[in-house]
Image 1 (cartoon, rainbow, N blue to C red):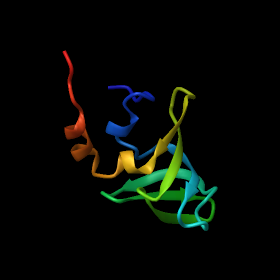
Image 2 (tube, helix red, strand yellow):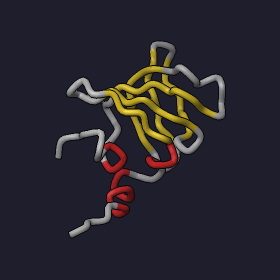
Image 3 (cartoon, rainbow, N blue to C red):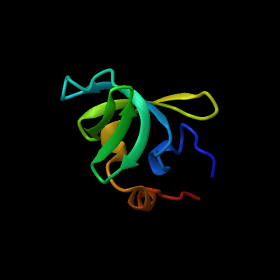
Image 4 (cartoon, helix red, strand yellow):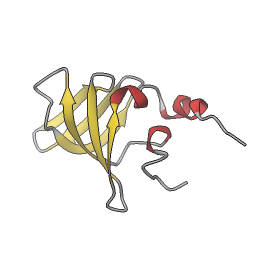
Length: 93
């Protein structure tokens, strides 16, 4: 499945370029880099200054998709492991 703005919260985030737009920790606001790891509650972002672990639920993130689409995501929507986030999909007829 291709990653799109509509399915990003259910998709794997590792490998995507990201920027922290807002966060409860002001030291990570503006941090840009590539997501190199993801846990239930955090993203590990590799930037020019090294790797930084950032809590998901405390921020708003801008993801740059491979097809040059930009998507802003509230961190509360991406809390959970990718395989657990898939369970939240509700199929409608």
